[in-house]
Image (cartoon, rainbow, N blue to C red):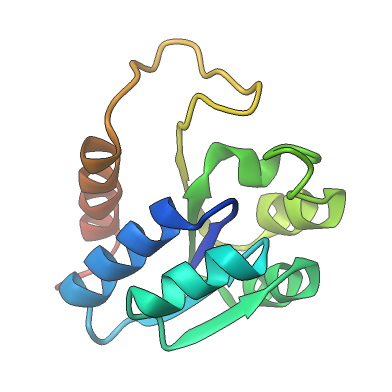
Length: 136
């Protein structure tokens, strides 16, 4: 399974996702993509073996992904204080992949009907959704 994790800002969410996914799914092909170098570095430090930074890596990785994981802003152009370009949002939205979007109520994007959960609870739900998509 080809899993793509996309994150921005400091990459803390992406780093936690990379750590949990690589531990639980050691055979998965995981690619970490940061919208900036800091986010990419954080995900590499967390154990990502494949990583890249910027718009074109998002576009290319989304073409090959089975699952794309990231904060909900990755499908909203100009979100995350402008780190998500329109091309990135389109690439994620048009990917022939399952998208697991994490409802981070930040950066002027609020998701109605979703309680503000802590990051640990959100990551646990991501892993539960991955479990439903593949076998351990």
